[in-house]
Length: 256
Image 1: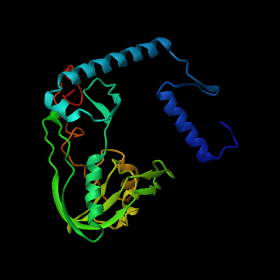
Image 2 (image 1 turned 180 degrees about the vertical axis):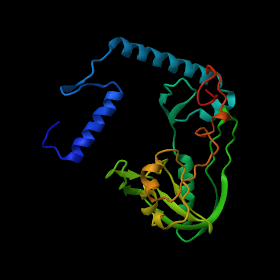
Image 3 (image 1 turned 135 degrees about the vertical axis):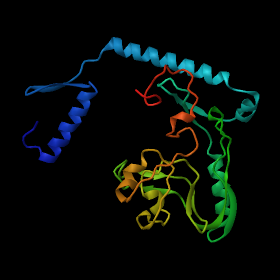
Image 4 (image 1 turned 30 degrees about the horizontal axis):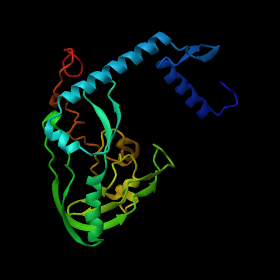
């Protein structure tokens, strides 16, 4: 370690090296050196083989569940498959047009700021894998503000990066203010509110649709955090899922 390095920076480097060592990416020789760990070609090839096998199995399983109604809904839809879960579960990421969010925003923009609207918010996508049908939330309120959805992140995650929510509107129902965006975006920075004229530090309650990343920007300003078991495929209650390929017992589904 460079003796001229500030103590705070030296500590950060040590912690980074320890983290790399835990992942077996570097080898640490006390009082001697820290070197990059050699690549195990055999293990790398085995990992690639396992991943290809799991992805193919997932595709076959997912395809076997498609029914004519699904094909009719998907026909002509431009989409791109990002990845299939490496874990072997029936999970995947796919990019589809954001027409649902756009439709909401168009309705709010056409009404204009200060106008009263009534619309069906969210819940447009069914989740047959867990037996849930799409169920939009019927809301009514006043369009308080319309923005272009652009702001610069100030929190500890992606600091300084300019991000874009798409056309965004604030709907005031009288009991709550709802930030409606035309593009999906993880709410990990207070800018999702402040760019629209809402200071989350002055609010009594904030409800975020986020599992983990919200902690970066909002935990420092929160007196308490209450995690809710919302319906959907990211539910923290693992008992709601239909596991078919797990070898039981397995933590945390079973006592170990």
